[in-house]
Structures are given as structure tokens and as C-alpha cells.
Length: 363
Length: 102
Image (cartoon, rainbow over all chains, first blue to last red; front, side, top):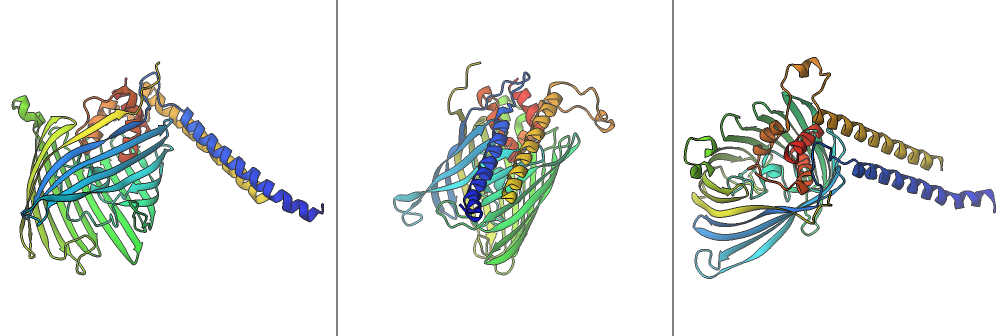
């Protein structure tokens, strides 16, 4: 065999060895991660796969049109060791409306969406690497409050489509973590890139962006800013600034966010108060009242999920926590715009569940 | 061939460095969570020590009603999920584990 042929024959071997070495090294890394158990003598935490999520039923009346919305959002959490987590959330929501909107028998269908299906590598304090389908980290609402068993008012803010096109989720990768932490404050960051996808249930837009916030744990005050550049058809910059404040001495929760994009700008301000610390009978301490006001002004004609005309809206909610995981929800809102004013009612309940998928090993 | 070997070597090196970083951070964070620090910086000495209860109270209620009870079997998994979602630090995670599954 000539030296030239030897090279040609040996090259694939070299590639194979390099590939095997690479896979082994990555496997070694993950094995190391898996082997490093977070369980220490100070805790007895288990790392069993979990099925969690929420189930609920909402009766909604918007402008006189009633809609029945039973829904269930299972969240699957599968840990691999204490540093790698596979997590996903799927939304199954049924919409039933009367045949002629206000009269006739109810009919409808079930919509299913994969909100996220991602692998998290919790490398260290500063780096959490995420790959797969994830919730777009723009503003506060999408990542933190989009789960219906979490948000205080059932309808999303008017400005929700800003920074969350096309589906609220991105397909790609994301880095996030704590940039710096001190007992008095911590600074968090997120950076991501999402590819365009038209795959059924996995739609996403091509976009890149990030979010950073500073949190003061003693006063429980957070301020943050998000940026996104939508890189599809028309390149659009979107910006959000937000604050979140839960004064430690009361059960008040104050959230505010301002959003700006090519299609419009607006803000929402939400204040919630739980009677937990009031000197009232314990029955009433599980009551929560919520108020939210929002204004939106379209730019360049609006659209892309945003109203085409100036819109103002306020909502008032009354929730009651039967348990920490089961609550009755209700709200009334009124929307004002040149296209017509409308009353929006929501009544229902939400339930959050959380179960291990199988028993833990016996100690 | 040399290029592939160099790449493979770099990957192995990277894997080793990452593993070592993770191991050292786990040990350091465990030590921080387990015992009061005997040698603290001037800045830290002036601020009260953060406990798992502090981390729980200041973070969990920011978005949702904190659960009253979580089975210890799933505490680790749930806190991993919340660490990724809420961008908590490794030290916060260990303090929470100690507080919620003592």
C-alpha cells in the first residue's frame, strides 16, 4: 500500500478516534455532573422525575360572547444527576363557544402547544446553558406568569405579543445565570438565539435577544430590561423595562412593565394584595384582590397581535386560595377603544399539582 | 489528523476544566451552606448571613404562592427547575435544599 493510500485509510481512523475521544470526554463531563450529588448531610433532597403543572377551568365572557376553557398544562421534570434537567410544558386548552357566538349549542376544539421542551445544564452559578424549545425571556410576563395557575388575572397584558413573536417560545439555545451575587443584591442575565421554525406545535421566529435584572433581596425589589431583535421578514427591535416589588412587611405585590416595538408601545401596572397579614378571621386571610391598568398606543398601524387603535383597559380580580395549590379566580375588566368598549369577565378555578413519577430509592 | 487530535485534546481539556470547576464549586457551596464561614470578607462581615428561609421568602413568593409542603423525594428536582427558571445561584439552591429538605 502506497503512503498516499495509507494516509487516506488512516484519516477516517483518526477522525473516528477524535470523535470517540470527544464523545467520551463529553460523556465524562456529564457523568461527573451526574455523580456530583447535591444531597449533603445537611439535606435529604431527592432527585426523582416529577410530573407537575396545572389544571383549571375558566368561564370567560368577552363583549357578551361566552367561552368555556377547560385546560391542563402538564410539566415534566426529569433530572440527570443534580446538574442536568430535562423539562417540558405542554398546554392543552379547549375553547368552547356557542354556535352563533351568543346563541346555540356549544362547540369547540382542543388546542395543544408545546410551551417548552428544553435541556438545562446547570453548570455553575454564572452559567445555565439551555438547548431546545424555551419560553422567550422578554419582560416579566412570559417566563414568570404565563402559567395559568400562577398569574393573578387570567388575561395576558395587551403588550404581551411584543418580544414574544411568533409563538411565545424560541427554538435554539440560551445562556442564563447570575452575573454577580452579593448579600444585598444580585444581577441576573439571559441571552438567547432562536431559529425560525414552522414545525407543527414548535413554531418560532428567528430572533436574538437578552434580559438583565438587578434584584435586592432585603427590600425584594427588582428592576430589569429586555431586548429582542426579530430577524425575520422585517428586522424589529423590541425593548421592555420592568419592576417587581414585594415589600417584606406586607403581602403586597407590585408589578409594572413598559414595552416598546415597531408595532406599538404600552405599559401595564398590576397590584395584588393578599389578606394574609391582616387582622381578620383566618377565613378571609386567603383572599387576594388584584388591580391592573394598562394602556397601549399602536405605532405604524399596530398589528402582529397588537391592537390597531389606542386601547385602555383596567381589570379588577378577586381570588381565593382554598389551599396553596387550589384557588378560585374571578375578574372583571373593561376595555376602552375607538373600536368599541367591552366588558370582560372571568370565573373559574386553578389547581397546581406536583407528583413524583416513581418512588425514591430507600436509604 | 493533527487538527483532529488537537481538537480532541482541547475537548478533553475543556471537559476536565469544567468538571474541576463544578467539583470545586459544589464543595465550596456545600461548605458555605453547611457551616458558618470562619473567614469572611470585610463586605460580607457587615451584612447578616443569608439563610435558606431568607432565600425562600425573598424569591419564591415573587411569582407564585409558595407551596406549603413539597415531598423531600422531589425537592431536588423542583429546586433545579426553579433555579433555572428564576436564575438562582448555586449557593441559593443549596440553602433552599437545606431549608426545604433538612
